[in-house]
Length: 172
Image 1 (cartoon, rainbow, N blue to C red):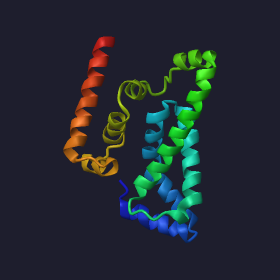
Image 2 (tube, rainbow, N blue to C red; image 1 turned 135 degrees about the vertical axis):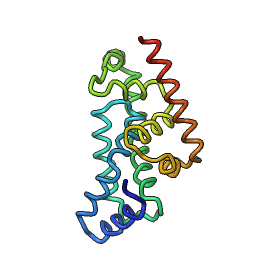
Image 3 (cartoon, helix red, strand yellow; image 1 turned 90 degrees about the vertical axis):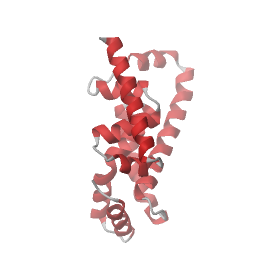
């Protein structure tokens, strides 16, 4: 796992024009950014588009970066772009009933368990599940990212797993 010092060093290098630093930042954060966006939009193709926009914004705004938490800064950009896209699409969907039907029947068969989790878990539980289970982050790392205590992360992770177990038993 990449730590904050690594990301901070690369952000400072990118500010000075080191293009390789951008690749390091991307490699260190792209999965976290994708899961953040996916938890809001619940659409893998759209999430990838917004992820691309996130990194364009990171590149454009790197000189305005003043935080001491690079992951939080990048995730905030991703979240804001995803929420803006969600709100924009929500307005469009309300106007077109055919789109609602098409979206309701659109199942992503590449990641059925992730889709199940994203549809049935609150955003915070989904993020914790993705970070802890899929990305193998330590619970204390997730706690730092999400501004929670380690025990809070453990509790929410257990809640999420219990909910998914109940859903899977119902389907069986």
